[in-house]
Length: 235
Image (cartoon, rainbow, N blue to C red; front, side, top):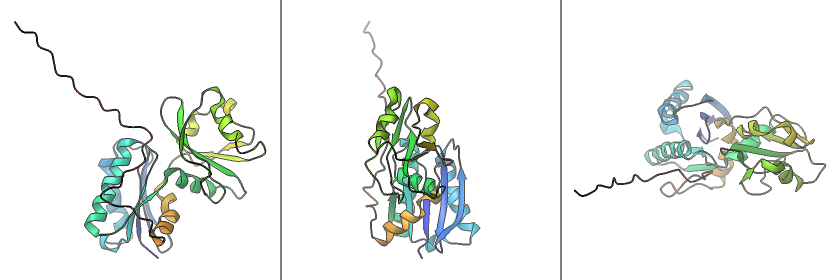
């Protein structure tokens, strides 16, 4: 079985895990991280040391590829790319929402549709729908929760369908906006351990990324402003 370093930095969570011997062998995470760049490399080193593994034993690095926060996703991608270049190993990107759906699926034992959702600021979330095997039923999209936006999104799957909602976007949902068949899952935070099975599948299928060209899927473009040159009045 491969040894894969797993990095989750799509949201406020900074999480690092090691997949080894068919399961998660080490996990370090900060669920409300203020600066991913300040702690992620320390977490990586701590995970490796905790099981006595050297960097050279890694077969690949997998990252949560978005959607998510611009700054934190870039941090994860930069660290992953640096390790992949230095160790000459593949880079794997896992859909953040699909990984969340997998985490939620571990809490239920029935056929449901998973709706993982991430906070996209204001009254908006990023979401997608996945079946009980975590196969996507659509594409990731932003959704404004005003005017029963979530109810309208769920209606496309039928009135008798049971939904499990997960991710940090569920905090934006008011009770009046939840369908009678929709239930909020205990999984509200991302975790690197959710990436493991997808990372192995993608590595075995040779579905890896171009390290130089890879870019994460951002929720929104960065808010970059250009400084204005001061205007001087001639005297």
